[in-house]
Amino acid sequence: MSDHEVGAATRCGFVALIGAPNVGKSTLVNALVGSKVSIVSSKVQTTRALIRGIVIEDRSQIILVDTPGIFAPKRRLDRAMVTTAWSGAHDADLVCLLLDARKGIDEEAEAVFEKLKQVKHPLFLVINKIDTVARDTLLALAQRANERLSFERTFMIAAISGDGVADLRRAMAETLPAGPFLYPEDQMSDAPLRSLAAEITREKIYRKLHQELPYQSTVETDTWTERKDGSVKIEQTIFVERESQRKIVLGKGGATIKAIGADARRELSELIEQPVHLFLFVKVREHWGDDPDRYREMGLEFPKE
Image (cartoon, rainbow, N blue to C red; front, top):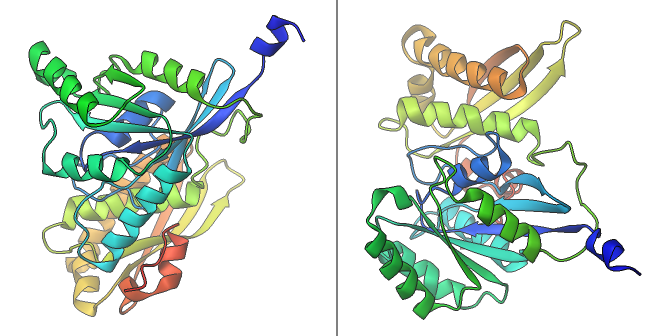
């Protein structure tokens, strides 16, 4: 086999992005993929399921696993999210640890370092938000992190502006194992559009109601119908745990749910580049936070205790 033929072989693999909440994982996924795949929000814990972006770089297919932020899990749902994040790290071909340049190695990052000691895959250190601190601070942080764990490579990026992202993408592509592509080239996210649509609506609920309505709500996409005129009809159910929460989501005269629906519909239309007719229903489902089936639907493992 000639050198040229060897060089032409494809590579494919999973890259797990690990880090404390709000270090910019979702922003980085979007910068790498070039479109909005994961839900970006200032609230911690918004990425529940492992929503992946798929990047083609040269002859490599990079499948990004965007893990939930690692935080101190209190409730059962939190524990499920953390378990899922770590199984993503153990199953990946490459693990990227993201650090926030401003926060450095704080308590949350410390916990991530401890757990990463058990991961046997190649590790990249990615320091994000480099535009917010002085160069000396960055170099000191990179040195401290590399003393703690043996990273193969260190990258300095600003995900929001895309600075340094191309270098990282190339290095990911080169590090992945040789093998055929796992996904069709035009499929840029394997998160079914239904689950992405549910995430978008759930994010709009949080944006509007995060004071009154804590994390006890979930959204499911019931139907997704392509219409002859090129538009899409989407029906979703918002599940809450109590009647009082249902009233909060509906709002006076249905005003709140109308506003949530309008925001979600606008973003969905932009995302899929088609007109969207969105119909939202709110139902009470008691104790859904303790129902194993709900977890499976969200791609999470149900914690036993």
